[in-house]
Image (cartoon, rainbow over the protein chains, first blue to last red):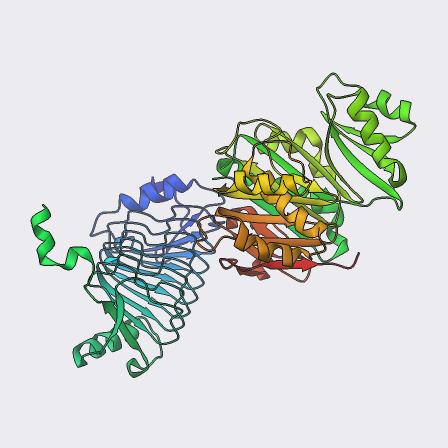
Amino acid sequence: MSAALPRIAAADPAIFDLAAAELRDLNATLQALPPDTNETAWTVLNPRGAHAVAVGITAPVAVTIEGHVGYYCAGMNSGASITINGNAGTGVAENMMSGTVHVRGDASQSAGATAHGGLLIIDGNASARCGISMKGVDIVVKGSVGHMSAFMAQSGNLVILGDAGEALGDSLYEAKLFVRGSVASLGADCEEKPMTPEQKSELTELLRRAGASADANHFRLYGSARSLYHFHVDNAGAY
Amino acid sequence: MCGIAGLFLKNSSLERELGALTSAMLTVLTDRGPDSAGFAIYGAGNPGEVKLTLRAPASFDFEALAAGLDLAVKVRDDHAVLAVPAAVEAEVRDFLARYHPMVAVVASGASMELFKGVGLPADVCGRFGLAGMSGSHAIGHTRMATESAVTTQGAHPFSTGPDQCLVHNGSLSNHNDIRRRLIREQMTFETQNDTEVAAGYLSWKLRSGARLDEALTSALDTLDGFYTFVVGTETGFGVLRDPVACKPAVMAETDDYVAFGSEYRALVDLPGISNAHLFEPEPAKVYFWERQA
């Protein structure tokens, strides 16, 4: 399929114009790339808000999407570096395993949902439920996040340079939430915690990797108070 | 699911394109709502006249009806817009109810016309000739039915007051209770549909003297359920999402227009979209634009 792609020159990134080609062909092409592919740079033109752009990639390639995307962009990413020069709809980088997804604009709801690894960078704001059920991903939001962010977040780090909406970290497990701005309210069983030097170093490194000019000393850390039912050993006998 | 498209022009030079732009937006939203579609469009009216949008079975002769009443009519598929002097609107409504009970009065207003029907959005827009219509603002909907049957009556928009319309993505959980309370306030309802109750609630607040933004603010306290609403009045355009914000919404604003789409895909062909201010309306926040009448 990739033989049909319009190439400008061998040294240029492969250009895939969604105004002229099918989204399924783009995803099938990217998903078929072997880990040692020489086609390591891809540019996607005219996404026009399409859903499921550049999903399920398993090769360590760079994909740049020029424009706004719809739902689930870069979902299930495993090792690719995906940049969206625009806004992303619901569920960007959902269930990412590894790699990097960088949204240069705003992200809609459920950014990074259930993601196991990798780094999700959002230059603008993310709306509700950012990092819902995150399972190890690192998410850096340079703007603010909406309500119910990090709901049932299990592990990983959510870094918010702006403000957090209502019910941050509701029913949280072991994920760490770093917030520089205000928090409208904390969800059930989420509490502020002292930041250890190790956690501060980890935050500083995350900010560096995300290209965020912010001082780790200006953040507060929130985590689980571990007081809900499933944290009590006495309830283990129920199973 | 369901899809919503709305376009409120600030610049009158786009008025001739309003129908074509709205039709294209609704067509994009087909996969959010393939069951039925509809739209309200606010265009020029004549002073002292009310536009009555009527709907009747296919065999009904609107031309003969209008000729008999000595009124002008514009027939569009199974709908027709009758131009009625405001002073005799009640008389014409009584006449229709008595002698033509198969004719439904879909909407009325100084500028609003409202069309809806079962079928794919592109077909519905085509049947009514939306692409050729002009106006100052339009609100449309593509429906994936959940709370009531796939019928023209269940299609959106709903209109429960003059020049007022509402479209809804979501479902309300307390609509039966609110409907009973509004019926006690002399509001009338044509269907068992939840969205009609939301429209009726806003109409009741407007009738009581509230501005559209005030009516929307009080809806936040009264209506329970999932909703993204887009509402229109003769001069206004409002958007409201419930506090949980399950239903999607994207807005674009330029010097020329305010546009609403359930997804960005619906906005992508609007003129000047690449320089528009794009934003996701916040939960439980009333958005409201008004023009001079």
